[in-house]
Image (tube, rainbow over all chains, first blue to last red; front, side, top):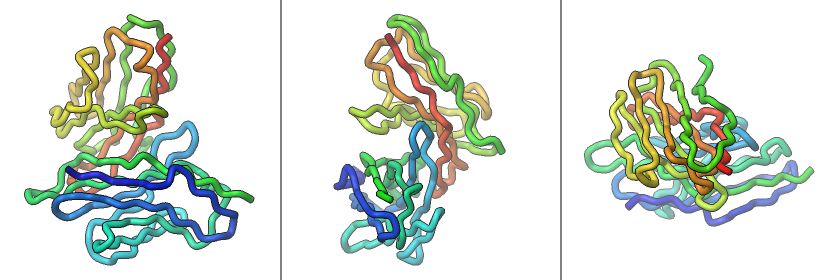
Length: 117
Length: 114
């Protein structure tokens, strides 16, 4: 069965420093991977996705993620963190399967990013 | 486009009462999803529809929960009777439904059952 893991409940980083939020996955077939962000009292917002092609994916708000097939990881990164980046971040995977992608997303448990000024 | 619209934004009710949550997906989207979010259980998919047809309802907790999508622009999630453990934020999301596209989430309905 497909699954996604976010090993850190919280990540703390100082403003201006680079940040990484980790995600690993387990799927049968080709992985289709997504990152979402949730600000307090809001719904989830799409940041970026990997479907195929270049392993480095660029998304909204200066975020990027690197797909690593050998390590089954899809870590979210940003070169310089902002206080306004503080939020809950979710990694998600959709199993491409052998008959084509389904529409369901399997979400991780979320990582709270706290950026200190 | 206004995005995914949910109503009400907040609902406080007493145990045993019926609760109906409403969702209007983004126009042109063919898939609609209902999620529940709590501190204890995180984000859970309850049910999703493709072209107004329920595809997977394995996440619906029990028979007290039901969902309908009578047309492409409207869906409801009903809880009858409600219980305090149903207190959560309920999100509706929609997507084009190609299997490769992202989901767009509504602002959520915060349900409190006393």
